[in-house]
Structure formats: structure tokens, C-alpha cells
Image (tube, rainbow, N blue to C red; front, side):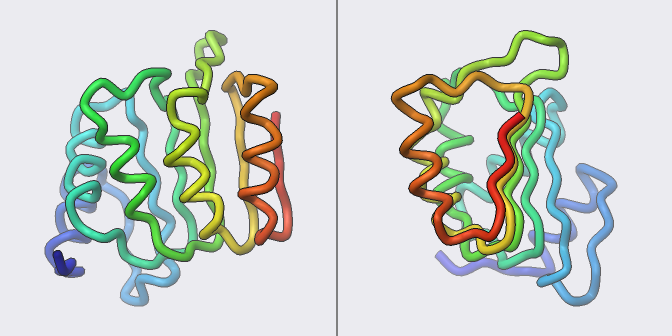
Length: 142
């Protein structure tokens, strides 16, 4: 299914209040998954191919993905400069284990930097994440 950039960016701006530059390759796409309106954006972009952009950052990412929206979104990502993933800021550090397949896909498309923070990365997943990030210049794990 083909993406309609004007509709998708208008929806993103309406729901998140995020700035949308005229050149979408400079877009800093940021979603806080603890907010309902941001989850609506995540759901839309899981159904249509994501547009190429500069940064994609997901924060307050849940440990589980009951409806598959996070997985679908991660698999829709094209080539991006920076990819960031933050778990909960409340100190719970949710595990990324259930998102590993989608994350591997997203990380293969990152060219500049990959960032993980406030999350738990099980030993079995760490090697996979490092390998998937091999095309980027920098990998940061906090």
C-alpha cells in the first residue's frame, strides 16, 4: 500500500504537535507510547510504509505488544539516520525481548546512530542487536 505523505504528516502533526519540516528527510519523528494519541500515530504508520526521515525515536515503549502495532511500525521503517528506543522513565526498565524481531529490522536501516536507554536487554538479545546495528556509525546502550 502506498503512503500519502501529506496525509500522514498532517496526522502526525495533529496528534503529537510535532514539527514537520518541508523536507521530510529532516523529520525528527518522536512518539511517546504512554500517550493515546501517539499510539494512534503508531497504528497508522504500521499500516502504511513509513516515510524516510532523519530520526525515529520511541519512548515509554511497552514491554509487551498485545496488538502487534509496535512490531508493524518497526517493520515499516525505511532507511533512517538515527533510531532511538527508550523504555519507561519510571525506573522499571522493561525488557525488549518481545520486540527483538522488529528491532532487528529497524536497526538494519539505521545509518548514523542507534540508541537504547531505560530498558533491559537480555543476554541472548544483545549480540543480535549489535549485529543488526553494524551499518550505523555509533551504538549507544545506557
